[in-house]
Length: 320
Image 1 (cartoon, rainbow, N blue to C red):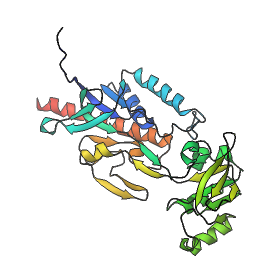
Image 2: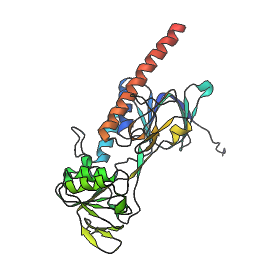
Image 3: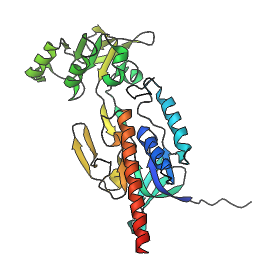
Image 4: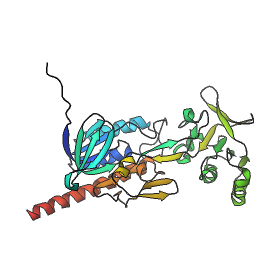
């Protein structure tokens, strides 16, 4: 029996899309329709996986996220785009800075002339018992995504972000029964102007640290404070810390910039980063994007890359 030797498979694509969410699949769809040899690498970590439905996407309002992605993958594959369930371990520039080598966890190394990084972000939640388990169900972060489904119910908002006051005022559009739990914020640290706004909006402000989310019969029923008191609520909003998955972009040397939500790659209106040949799309570039925005990002990046490759190949032919 001949002993197996490790070998790395190298396949060349015109474009590799890293990330198989709305942005990545949208980019794959446009590139496939443009007859580009394209690979989409999907690590299978969609941000909206905890949610039962996604809202606000015209013609797909209320569709379960997994169903949305399954339909998208089928559409993309129908144009000859290759999709693989894998994890990108590293990305390096090719020889003479031409193209990129992408190392996959499966052992493959694949190459491409252009890259689209659509790796999304992770929501870092406060360490409060019950929050992680209920997130995406009745512990929520975006009223545009979930406000209609819990409208007119008693809301709680847990202050755990510089954006919490704004979030509290925002959700009053969906319910007039809103309580802001200051959690680890001291009432004296809340600006008087914000307190006046909260009062004008009819928001109750409750000091004291939140100890846990109270759940009964698989339903959120209240918020328990550290002093033992329980405030009956049916839905709780909070602002997670957004953690964009930008490690690959940083390793390639992409310039990062400060935003109100943290560091993000500097990109132009098409998603082009400061690294030649590399685009970013979706929540990897702007943490507040919804699914519909991410899909638009992927479209723009793909169309720009296709146009660039057309002209690059024509110019090469002219030189010959």
